[in-house]
Image (tube, rainbow, N blue to C red; front, side, top):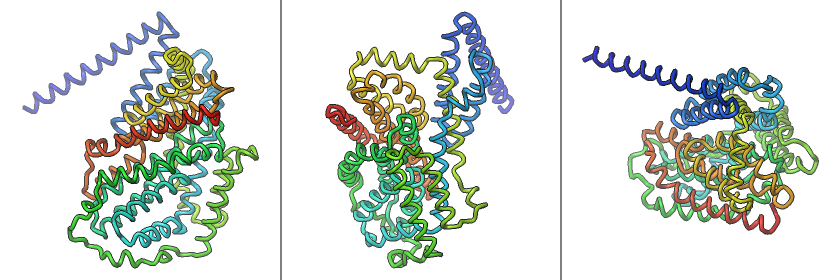
Length: 473
């Protein structure tokens, strides 16, 4: 039996190797016959395989992206005539995006050590008095506020930990709160230019200022909050959230917590708040003063370090290096793909389908981004579509220069929320519940968030189209 199984595995391995050799041989022959189309096929294939692997093995996405980068860079040396390392440094990598991610990571990790976020979370708990619906609403709004300023991944980590601890003490089912937080991060992911990684990507490329971004997105986000809360309340009736199980934590003890108990140094606490306020004001003034938002983000992080004086060695270890490497890898993948002109061809194809109509172009971007963001991951999907939107947008640069860009941001943020692997917040949500032995099934996640995500996508398309008709974007 064992020898038979080994023999079967060996046959599968041989067949797999043979399959790869055949595919590689076919691609080489195809390239020799038609170098232009051959390059497109080879680099597109690497890109698609990388996407599919990321979708299946999301916990290893950084490794997959970096290995894919190694492959495409090696191929680029031999297949792209004008390829040089300067292309990678000067044209592929968006340094301002990396600066924003690095600066916000500095700011968040420095402020976290002062207890500011823990203090805020305990305040919310006390205001709700542990009652189901008020706690649900306040948690939802808190997640949106934190996501808007600190990016949705950070907000999900902070709020998710609070939800798990609080629900254990209050004997509530954490699933509705966690899924509500996922929806909140998706909604907040398009609220400001620093609220999510897709927003940072688009904001930097389209040169959209903090205030300009906020003026367009804030009304939609604010109007969507009651709709989302009403939907979640219907999907998870408050009376069904209490578990009526025996809890190991005293509920009254949690509700009687003093928020200041988590603050070790009141001076550092106040200075952390000051540094956060300075950074937000800096983002607001960046465009009028012609200052890159990357400079503001790094300056905010440095100000927080100078004012609060954290342990520098510990701080360096906590920084979000993986996000920086992931972005750099995505830029390289998209940059090499762009050099083969396959993205330009996709843009031309979409132009032909839309017939040059602005709103049909917007609908196409909305559907494509919304669908593939949930199916794969909203970060690489947004990164891949930026060159496409940039090319399509040239026709509308005088009349509606921001419309397609905002469509891309809104659809990437909302589209990434209908599956557990469409956004980092969804992945964190599943992992939070799995650690507490409350595994969240894929079916439950999709049944809960797909309907509201589709509704929000449709409403966002209508909202942005009205603004475009009025000449605001």
